[in-house]
Length: 179
Image (cartoon, rainbow, N blue to C red; front, side, top):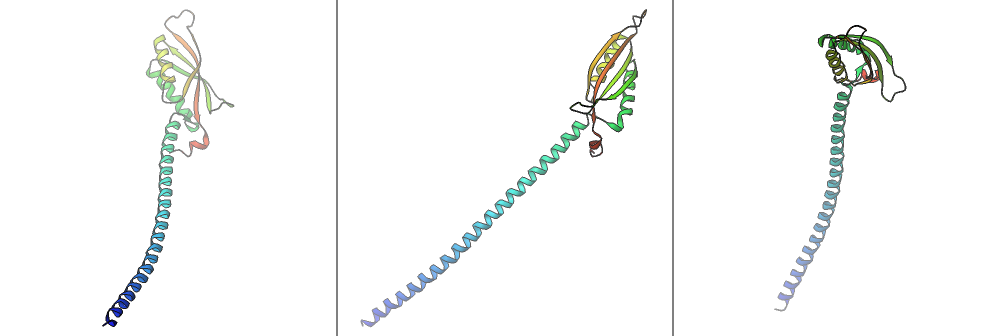
């Protein structure tokens, strides 16, 4: 009878040792897989972060392009100087004055590309002043830099303004690349 309990204890000990060995092997395998999963998770996180940075850079580049186009919309393209001058003359006609272009000169050495534009505007005082304002405050980058007002001898109704404007001009290289 003593043999039976001893064999049961030995059998239980063998089952316990086998289970413990299986558990240790299983634990080692699971731990290895958890480490691989953590490494893959970090790698995916790094790729996701890189993708989000790239998406943010693309978004900012698009916004910058739109802002650049807005800025260039306020500059006269070098190919559009003649239509620009014609629009100034048309503005004068619309407001009851005569606008004559006296001179157009490039202004080298300025931080931005500008043209120096000299105009003679004739008409009654209110129309001359409205024309000057319409030219200076149009959508293009124009700044009134010099102004002389006078009336011809013997005429109080007719005014003449000699005005000089600095006009922002889009560089030729960017004029071809903007949409």
